Image (cartoon, rainbow, N blue to C red; front, top):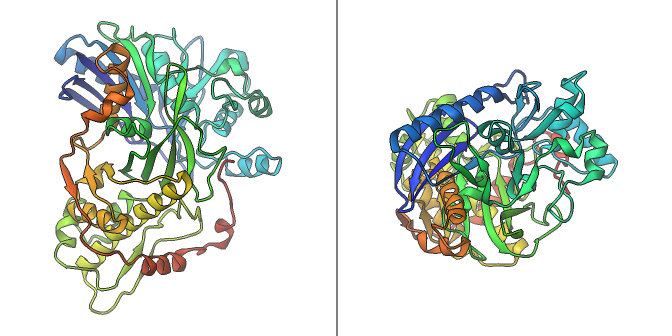
Amino acid sequence: MKFLVVDAGTSSLRASVIDSTLRTLSEHVRPQLPASPADGLVEFDAAAMAKAAVDAASEALGEVGPVDAMAIVNQRGSTVVWESATGRPVAPGLGWQDLRTVGRCLELGAEGLHLAPNQTATKIEALLLTAGDHDPGTLLAGTVDTWLIWNLTRGATHVTDATNAAVTGLVADDGKSWDSRRTERLGIPDAMLGRIVDTAGVVGSATALPGSPPIAGIAGDQQASLIGQGCVRRGDAKITFGTGGMLDVVVGAERPSEGVTENGGYPIVAWRDAGEDMWGLEAIMLAAGTNVEWLRDGLGIIDSVADSSEVAGACEDTGDVWFVPALLGLGTPEWDFGARGTFVGLTRGTEAPEMVRAVLEGVAHRGADLVDAATADADLAIDVLRIDGGMAENAVFAQALADTTERPVEVAPMREATSLGGAFVAGIASGAWSGFPALADTWAPRARYEPARVPERERWREAVERAGGWHPALSALDLRPR
């Protein structure tokens, strides 16, 4: 069997055809870089994204022929509002990183309605204000999955799945419907929002594509990566090291918390199957690969991201140099938006290899922070850590992660496991796999790293303390949803 997956990321859109033996038969990528018209604003051209999805998917299908089903995986939280009659967006889409609603979130928080600017809720409200004199009854809204499915089905299907809905800030306690208290407060008619459906299951036909393949799977990118790495049992965990870093761990059928956990993580719906939710916890690193890009673009001490492994490998250790990767603040567990990137321990003898290694090891220590937070909050053991994303290809980093977490680290067979996760959910709906538990047997890492050094975690915590609270006003902000 063959499955088409449209993966709409933050910086690119990818259409892949993957078969049931997990081979990638075709892949077409379209750059989709967001725009930043001012500090803190992140926008994207939603119409261009929809066209890219149709074009890339059509090219992939043109190479391999008909497929049995397709799936959508996507950046979560990014938001579009459009005219139901014409399909025209009322304004640029707002990316998940967009911070224009920070003030509004603080205002609502004072009323007891706790939302974060990276959630969909206040983004829709902001876009409705932009829409001006449009009658709200003539508009539709949704996350990227909703928008792409509406376009691929030529307006016939308006849905989102539970993994995406759960991070909008608008879902009722039952997880099955929209919270009218929140939607009314924000002026969002419930009819504007899509129906919440299972992660695996046919929702419509992509009539905009050759052969009109059935859309049989939807998942947010981090959940798709979790599924793609065969993490389907309690305690299975992965970290995706891309621009930022996201740890997701499977917890079970019971929701682990109502809001942010004691150690700064968040409950997520890992997937919904036959109306039943499998829950997970997510811990967040605000900057991961960004730090390596900064070494290349900002400092110029490496020529490419790939060079970081070789340069860092020129020294055995950092010479007690430490780097706290807080270029955008610290996420889980501190959630200190006023923290800033910090080097400590530099001497006249410090050279590029030590600095590069310190950056890689700093990101690894942040990975260990996420693991510590998740295991404490979920009261479970993570015996092995699975990783994907660009930094997963860096051998020095992967070994440092094994050392700092004191766990074996296994590298996904595909650099980005999101597309594979999309193929899995479409395949479950199509009968290629019997269900989510069966995916455990598909895991085949391409590399494994065993812990080899005792980590100096107390020394790391000292460095983190020095990085914290650099901008006290920002550090005082609490924008976490409850």
